[in-house]
Length: 168
Image 1: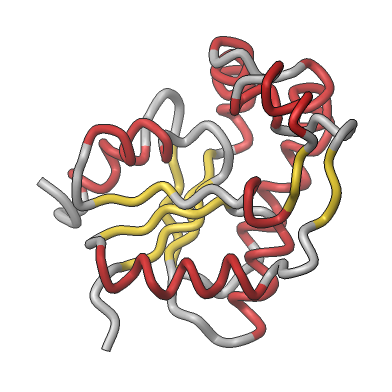
Image 2: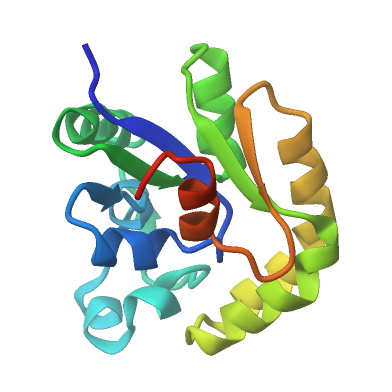
């Protein structure tokens, strides 16, 4: 029987912040499960700079099984497990009828999210990709079967979870 709930959150909703602030919350990013990186890249890039950085990385041959295994393991150890709401992951969860929450902002919040991405030292290529795909991604999330946590304006995942009584 699983313990923790899973929330797939779009970039910028506050997953990393929550994972660092609360001991019972795990921010399970997929970068080091999906990709292997050269030592040179790892020595010269921050975690945020690795997002969308294509040079010096290859697909991990154990992906996605390695990530899903870690997700199920983390659900036994944490009350909340936060994962990225990438289409690849969301499609997998939908395919296996996995119960989870999907957290994303309204389309009207785009400017706020673009600013968040810039303020966290994410590379420009990734920010531009997010800028181009923002509306399409939000519409995609709206079409999914998962329970939804929709953030308006400058609202964060933390404030939404408190508002709904999921966390104190």
